Length: 161
Image 1 (cartoon, helix red, strand yellow):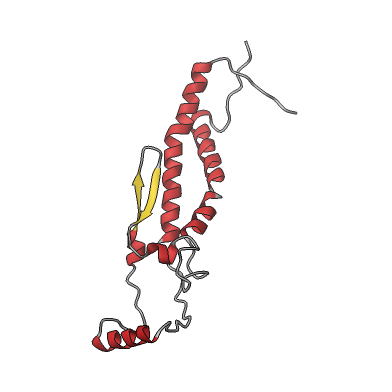
Image 2: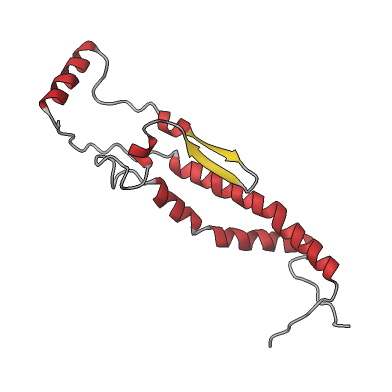
């Protein structure tokens, strides 16, 4: 059996939609931004892949820097890339950004990622695509939570007059 109830009280319907959409959409935007930040600031394990020198000049620079103490082996993560991620509130929601100069080489689009990081670090596009898949379920939960708070879980039936 299917029951469809129609309400002629447009004012109440508009107020109901305002209560469901406006505060919750911004909250959902913030939850999505927080999930993006969580995923983007989580580093994968160390790869331990060999990184061969591409030129004799690079090899000489590496050993000179190693001898002078400018670099150490094995590389120790500084977490600068993770600290670079932040969310900024906009009029439409949130923007997630990273201002670290080399961020695109590590987590950028696949075409921008350094070959060494491809398939090891998720690109920001891959993370966004995964998180986007969760938005419909978040919207459903948000609308249901609002309906629960307003009507005890169901919209009351109003007889058509």
